[in-house]
Length: 218
Image: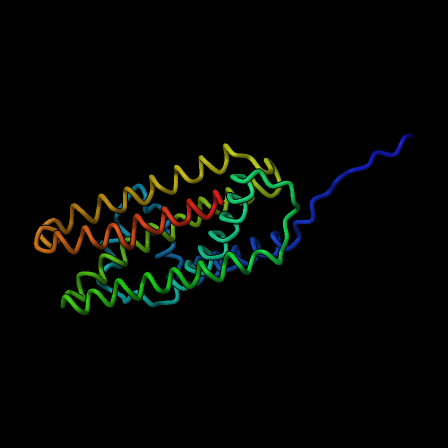
């Protein structure tokens, strides 16, 4: 029997991170089972938004667990997407991961701070908090898409451009649904603060996407 040399990609650190994110998901489901069931059908039913939009603040344990789940999977997905876009032949390197998750966490917190800060300046804290809650709900749900994409990119279709582009398309589609819901519910507010809305859209929504896209290509 002739020995065959197999090139095995060391992705143990990715396995650990994906498993850790899954733990946060399981804890969220176990501790908030009813809320979890309503949340999981969010793209097809707005029941979750109507039930929890005005009941609780942005900062709660359910959002915290989902936020951690999202951040981990978002960072891994960006890592994979960057390697796919630049056609990297290097094996996954855990040392590069902090340089992705660190700026990502900083960006998300700065963006949230700017949103709430602007709400305070314009005296519309309550409304903006509700808007941020809706956006955050759809964005957190995107973590599910990234989670499955990360599993496929790690163990099934490694460095697959189709998986990356499909995941990006689904993420954009999901968040567009969220934006359409927000625009419908807050037409009067947008009309009253139209200039602010355009400025907000360009500075905090479109610009970050351009920056992330440029980062992945460079």
